[in-house]
Image (cartoon, rainbow, N blue to C red; front, side):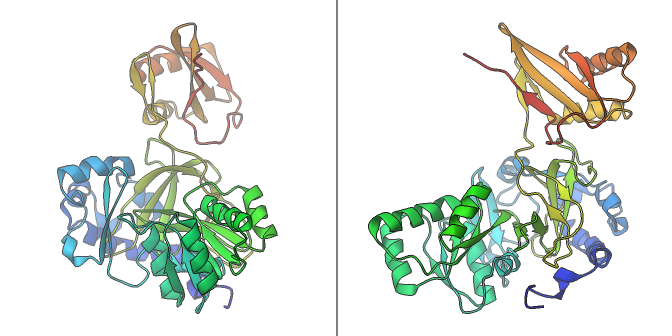
Length: 410
């Protein structure tokens, strides 16, 4: 068990699923005590939500909606019953979105991901995520301290002062964006400063291409990435297997068709939706606006939870065509009205000074009649005319895009 945080990480997948969904009804009951959830769930028997299929019937809460909902019902939009004073810390992130931190150990569930990156009791950790108003710094700080690490609350910037801290405290681990780690390493080389004590890192908040991972490795630092948000903390994290990101324990991850709450098959790219089993601050089907896909099988590191491919773009693909917004949920509605189709993709182009739309649809049986029917459905839903083209089943890109805006302007 030395390679895992605890025994729950190596449970049989079916055992984990059974445990999650046995606990879910009580979490839903607690969530429904808050007025906003009570209104959303009023037509549902929450005691019967004991499977992924039942969970998928509940409405999705979009992260993009939170600023408006919270502004109307300060500070938490009516989704939390506890008063602000009952929490340990209170934050804000761009939007603005207001986030509380529960007054418990490891409230953001980050210790597990840090452990997978090699962080251990007694390590000194340089944490360069911001501690100012936003929760980023405390997400890493709380997890590292739960592991028994000592944390330098450095925050971003001030590289000269960071060099002094590194040379004095000799941290073996780094938390922050991959970009800032490169800035530190390059700056230290140029200034002749010694940052060689850093040997492991957990990075997040920015793209972490393989080329940068290899550059860090060549400099003696094994860096792993995590997918986390200011609302939920750690959702998934990389392990030494480097085979995607393992979903964290005690949360339920769904991948849905963008603009809907409808789960897609494993392997299909879609929007990530998360339900947390946190009785202090539950989120039920929070759609994050990010794209990813579930990977087949389990990690060779021994952890048995589901894996995601990591961040694959944004699901928020709304665009204006001839002055009118066209949204992914409208494309999804076309698919619901024509269930015989495979993937759909609305391609927006420009001819001369005119916006044009083409609906590309996967089908095994293309016909003029189907094209006419799809064209009529497109106009009915979007209120704009567009052409229709067909593709073979599986031919359109598996990238989660419902709308591809290919317009170019000189």
